[in-house]
Image (cartoon, rainbow, N blue to C red; front, side, top):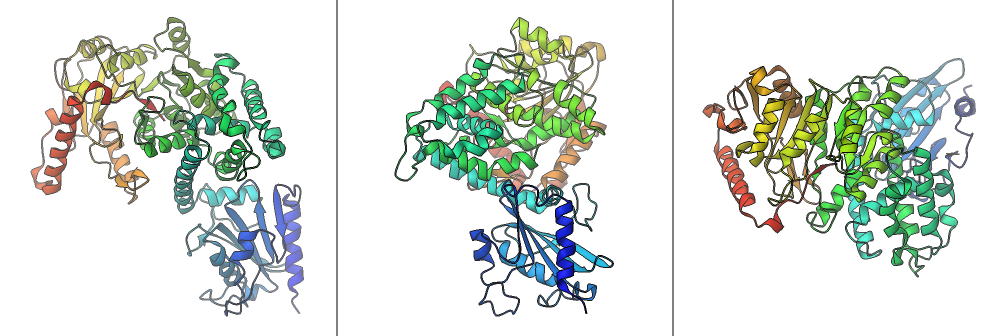
Length: 624
């Protein structure tokens, strides 16, 4: 007669072989019970009898301290005949039915990985499912490469497979945005941090948590001593990162304001270990899992962007305008970056362009050596603002990439420019500071400097106010004397929402004078990215239509396709307008009332942005 204990022993042997029991502090394996309060609560009415009045538990419950939003459930049956019913509606008698029954009770709080096992060591069957948090519908668990998982693997591999599930990714991003609002309010109301201090507190804490001593012992420090331990841990991580282009003091100085903040070192009745301890704990629990799994997720930039949104703009912050993440991604696709390229950003901000490029470059790598080469040698950045430099370098350090090639100072500084040129980057990306007065450097001066720093024939891409393209200027002439204007794309009027600036993307070929190439320029009308405004989220791809729009835009650009209402080829010089609207034919058959409304809105916004007093204009731009 079949014995279910034999199946349980089979599972336990696999778990031991795969290291599930090696570190009880990191991975907790429980059998038919749990000490985790949320799991106990979720399964308190999960009896398989169907009456919903008693608790029920699967054979194994597995959790990990580093990934607190996921749980693994394993249900066993002795005979493969009881592996799965036709309708998955008999949880008492079948392994698949039972484990999915438990998963539905926990999925309101966790992303649940469900494993059904039946049979003996000689003849057995395994099934793997994932139920995303907030969903009651499971689907088969597949690896990041798309291959089905049908045998037991390590916990890291299980979590990686679930993490790259599209539904799980979207839910985690929603959770992160919701948490960023919670963190913002805590820092504002409880810690009384200024706007410019909040992202530094986040970045510094994430760096400190990369120090294993700090991560394991910070909770034992009293409130009055933790700030010093915090700053010393930051310095230790930065020192280990070996930043050769900036002194340790330059990198850590912006964080000292957090270290000495009086409210963070006070024990209170509500927070006896102090507010800094609470900030560290919140980030350790909610954000560090993103860094350990989503190596391409710009956590610091995303947090900083959310802080700016919640404060109604950047007037009290660091005086920057972050490039939306889908635009940084678009730059990499327009440039068609690969493992063989070197990417430069002379206004690096928190490193959004560099990190987005790195993600796309790594996708083309085939060996670990190529990935290492990308991270060490193929990402070059310059940032003048000390606080933004600290954020950018932090962002790079957290990913173990590019930190040796991030320069602090003006991109026009002769020594820095010489160092940057020595890298012979062939792709440049920039969102320059947006001039608010005649005394400020014109945006196109930064574009020119970026192009001058590239290798001959390199591709330079910039996003600038549309006035740079429409108004005549000596800067347009200077650009065309040395470089070729390959393309200009008119961007959505609210791309930088809530900041009111209308932009366009310019693409140049470096060190090939426009008159000499005598090329026509391709103009794209990229006004509609299908993003919509959602309360507390800003502009988001609510309907999941952006990937299709993005891919069509990139295809049109790469093939220089001309379509009425979308794109046009036109020979231009410095005196002409560099926008699609000036030359594009309109396909009137595709227009409706909403198109006219959008054009009128665009014109009104453009007119308003050009008539605002200087103090209300956009201060500057940088990439996320």
